[in-house]
Structure formats: structure tokens, C-alpha cells
Length: 394
Length: 78
Image 1 (tube, helix red, strand yellow):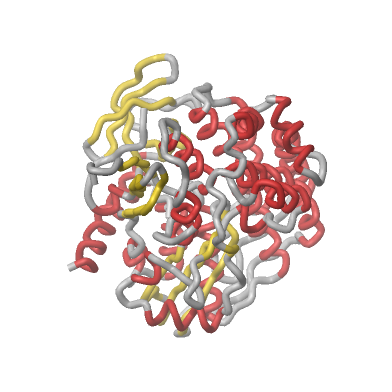
Image 2 (cartoon, each protein chain N blue to C red):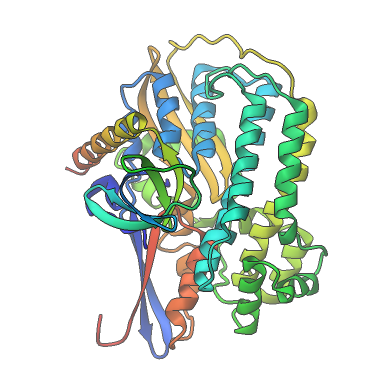
């Protein structure tokens, strides 16, 4: 079983990483992506609401994040600010999706790396909790409407869904602010995530893949709008930089100031161990973040919207894999231009955290596997193959 | 962007396994994460698992959109 698909166009989204070995170490790292960064052109000429309905169908794995970013971009273009209850409900859905995505990595992808079976029951429990939350907020219609959908929060049901999520995530919670706590949790080997962290530590790979690439900073809205507007050929979408620098986005970048992650980075750099831990720390913090939002919820029918005005807008959200930015130009109720800047393009940039993290790594029989672990830790949204190119075979 | 291309179930193999057709390519996947999937249903696949089931009409519309997307990408590249 694999994810290989037919070749060509939108079907053939994948990343190929080639590690060129020189003098016993990885020299040049080449990253070749066929991800269709301009696929969102398919929304051009469609009514705004149609585009918003299509987003979760086209991007169903991170459908909430994509829809949230698209909705925010459309509202920005139409000059609307979402009412606090609507913004809170959307954020709840986004946090639930992020928890579910991280949990999928830990229960579907990581067991595969350990040659273990996926924990199907655990995956289903988290998926059900996320679905229950959606039903508890918008019971009778879509939430992705400019100005907001018909929000009728059932607080008891939302609380129950968050409690279920919390219970399912409990085995992944790492209590403590120092790397010792992380190592104790890993050595308990209670979950595939802990076993993978233990294997990484046991194999001396805690610092593998550490890179000097810094976290993606806040992006000034007006500046980002101008950069994207000028990106007529999609070069920025494919190889983004900010003020000339490449950046990392995602759980490790977001959780850098968390005490446990900061301590782990101090000891081992931002390598495999810190990255695995960052994803677990972020995931297990979600239920509490969600509970903090609950009080903002209230019945809301959506703000009135004049959808025929013309303008451009930016929507940015923190998706499971990192910062996701949508930019839209609208006029006469239709989408005139649609651009998506996705986290994978930062993290799998030719000079980004994957490339810089692998450059200089020791060659040897474990190299391809170790590089695959780093790919998984950075979590591209498409299939990514790693090849080691020995001298004389280039 | 994690494009979610619907795959059509062509054969149930028992033990929660199934054969699917993904744009003309046959693959074997697990159905253990979706309920009541049958031949002709469409599913979204990730790492060998069907993560969600789509109704056929919705899936056909999504596939038509992906076909348009291919055209848009090729036009942009030319």
C-alpha cells in the first residue's frame, strides 16, 4: 500500500529529495517538487461562495484550515471583520483539526516508521470528537460564509467533544519543563510517538536534522499583499522567502518558546527529538486552548455582507503543518484571482529546514531512513521520496 | 496543499481491505477507518488508509474539478 498515483498535473503532487554524498557526508541536497502551487487558479471566475464550498473538497485533509484561510481572505477583500462568536467557532474547528492531524501523524505515519500497526480505534475516537464539535457549533448549515454561518453553539456538546479529545490525547502528554521529562516519557514507550522518540534517542539521532533556519515571523499584511500581487508567475508561491531569508513554519517553529521544547533545543538543537516533542506538546495543549475559547461562543446569524464590492484580501491561519496564507481578488461577487501560499513550500524550500538540516549529515547505511524521519517530522502535505546519490552515480 | 483526490472502490477484499482506482491506477488500501464502504463508493486516501468516504455525486464533481485544475496548471505552464 502506498500513496503513489498516476503521473501528470494535479495528480502527481510529490517531492523528491536527493542527498548527494561527498567525502562521507551529505553535500548538496536537491529538493524537486511537482506540487501544483498554482492549482488554486481553478477558482478564478467562480462565485465566492462556490469557491468556499470547493476548498474543503479539494483539500480535504486540512479542509478546515484551507476553508478558514479562504474565508478570512474573502472577508478581508469584502471589508468585513468576523464577529467574535464566529471567529471563536472557526478557531475551535481549526484547533480540533490541528489536533486530529497531529494525532494522525502519531498514529498512522509514525507506526509505519516503526513497522507497527496503526491504532485504528484511537484515530477513529479523535476523528469522531472533531466531527461532534462541528455539529455542536453549526448544526444546520455551512460555517464558511462571508460574515459567518448560522452559529447555534451547544456548549454542553462542545464541552463533551473537547473532553473526549482530551482523553484520547492524554497518553501523549509530556509533563515537565525539561528534556529529562521528555526522555522519561519516551522511555515509557506507551505510544507509537513515545517509541519513536525513544528510538530516535537510542540511535543517537536526537540532534539529527538540526538547522539554523529560523521560525517564520509575523508577515506584514500590506507587504505580503504586495508581494503576492506581484507574483504573476508563481515563483514566490513555489520558493517563498521573507526579506531575503528562508524560514521554517509548523509545530517546531510555533512551540520554540515552550519551556520543554526550549530546553530540548538547548540540549540537542532543533533536530528530530525536539520536532517530535513539539508536535506532541502542541497537540496535547489543544483541549485547554479550546476550553478557553468556549465562553466567547453565542448564537449568531452571521453579519450582513455586500458581496459585490471589489478588492483584494489576505487570510492567514496556523494550520497543522504551519502558516497557511490565502490571497484573493474579488469583484462582482466572483473570484478574479486566487493564490495559496502553503507551509510545505517554506519547509521544503531548496534552502529551507529540510535541506539545511540534511546538509553535512554523515553518510552510511542509515542515512536514507534518518532523512525520512526528518521528512516525517517536517510533515509535507504530499508524498516525499528520499534518495541517496553516491559519488560517481550522480 | 494536500490535494485530496477521490479514489473509487473497485473490489472488497475482506479484512477491511479493498482495491481502489485512483485516476486509472489500481491500489490496495485499508477501509478500517471508514464505516460501511462498498464497491462504487469514493474515499480519500492517506498512507494506505481510506480516511473518509464521499458520496459518488460529490466525488464526481470533485474529480471534474481536478481535471479542470490540470488544464489550468498546463495553461499556466505554457
